[in-house]
Length: 155
Image 1 (cartoon, rainbow, N blue to C red):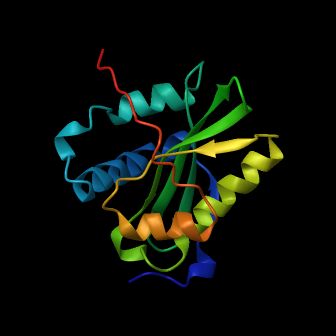
Image 2: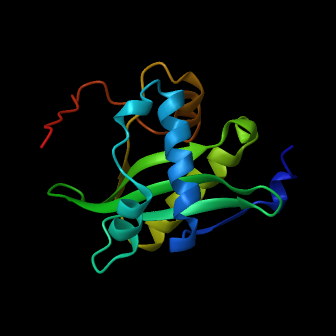
Image 3: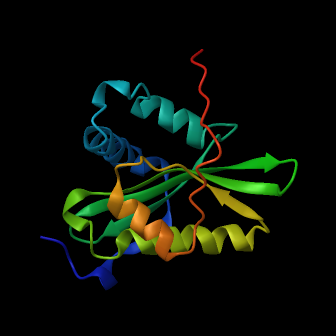
């Protein structure tokens, strides 16, 4: 059972949080119907986020009774038109905590962090069938831009 939302603390993730972060990633992959697509291991997440050259940062939502129940994983990128941007790779809230405002709190926390860093834009993607997430993004005033096509190149 979820604790009161006010008990949940959002804080920068640490190396000790990596097992819980990986578990959330796997939960998201199941939700998105692609568990086999996850190739990152906890060891890679540890090295890539907390090694000599961190490639990403993470904020975690921690319930004092249940542990890590949500996260935002992001990195700073650069736009020739906008300058510094934050790319939100994943916003994940464990299933039993969804629909209670935690996703909004995580997103608001990252927006505040972006403003503190002088970032001009945040970018992310959402699956076209994920209506709860789309509704959240519309509520905060995000532009869902159908004119850009996501390109991927496997290496």
